[in-house]
Amino acid sequence: MKQQIKSLTDQMTYVAAVIVAVLGMAFASMVLAPAANASADCDVRGGQNLSVTSGVNCAQGEDQPTELFGDAGIFTTIVNVLLFLIGAISVIMLIIGGVRYTISNGDQGAVTSAKNTILYAVIGLIVAILAYAIVGFITGQFATSN
Figure (cartoon, one colour):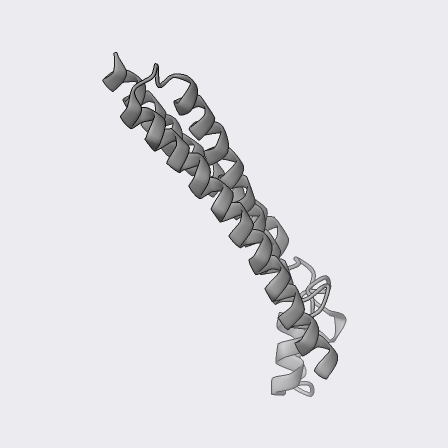
């Protein structure tokens, strides 16, 4: 019975990780997808506007950020998506640790394993919050130095 419960919690962990990964990729593709409309100066049939700068401007969508850092920057968007995923995984692992702790039935090894899961999930959440603060500080320094 204990082996079946351990197998079930392991399967729940894998399913939760796959769900978070799929949702994260879907969210990232929505946030980072290029815009469908190209800018108006991309008409180069006559050959007059053929330059590297016009090619870069033509390749960039209308709604794409032009800055690497700052509030609407690409780097900030990627960091926010990754930190959201870390937070979601930490919350899921907290729930899984709580379930494992509840169904341990006094087995000392299972209780220790569940407590470690909860401890590591909390540590992961704290590290994610500190990473967010550090990245926010550093990107703020780069954004104001321009």
